[in-house]
Length: 365
Picture 1 (cartoon, helix red, strand yellow):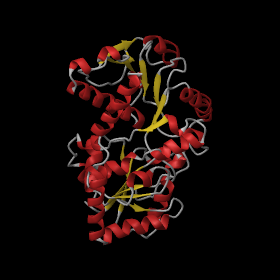
Picture 2 (cartoon, helix red, strand yellow; picture 1 turned 30 degrees about the horizontal axis):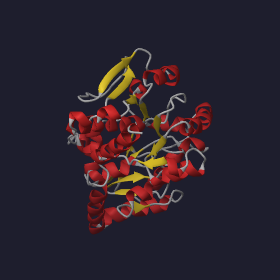
Picture 3 (cartoon, one colour; picture 1 turned 30 degrees about the vertical axis):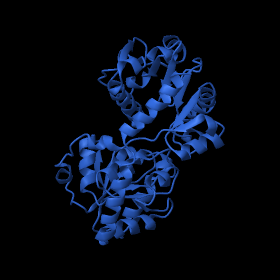
């Protein structure tokens, strides 16, 4: 049967960059597909190749996907002009928002339409580049993938990709459970278990860290601490954000420390004005950590009723939600149970199988 299918190629240019959310998704999907291929009878297994930069900074260990190293595979010129030749005659899969326009038989994953909005925090040059190129990349793709029904709708409404040619492939969240929790992170930061709120801080306007900062700036939450993951105080200040004076900065941390914070926290605060998916709340819920979230973008679609909600422009609604979780153990226990159940709907194995089904169908036609 493999002879009846086109070969499948993955665009691995992203391995030349650091590990961010989009790159994590692409890498995990490739690794899940590698495992799925190993479970298939050899006669039914398609030929799958990962084309990755020779000087990549990181990458997966693969057993069933062939790795081909490309000497200049980190450049945009390689992606637009060399990659189409390398993948000639095959199905080219691009999981990181970018694809070569010249390849006629490709799948493109677009995680959201945020690049179209003025509060995207993309530099102007990059934003306009995406605005010009992304619709063209989508139009020249056989199919577009995205991570939520909300993103599918926005890509359609903004004229990037029509709904009929766009399929939803949800993220998984169970990667956070692959690593044992750092049991000492709570003590090292001088925190009290169950008496702190975790927030993954960001200077990007749409991430809306300011509303959480304001909720902790006053006297409403005297017995709770705010722990900020990611940028430091001066990094935020340079972008016009002033964190509360009593905020505790965890800095950039690995998954073990993040899981340790989730497991020790009262809750996660996730106040984004929009998200194409919104991974941290599902990660937190998978660790038994309730979340207080906004109703922005795909967040209600992903979280449903498993969280408490705060208003994006009302700090008091956030401080009230945090206090409720601190004062009402029955409510917190209910949200933990609901969160664990909801997080179970988003596994990388399920996402990998969904991708495998889409690729097999596309490779046969």
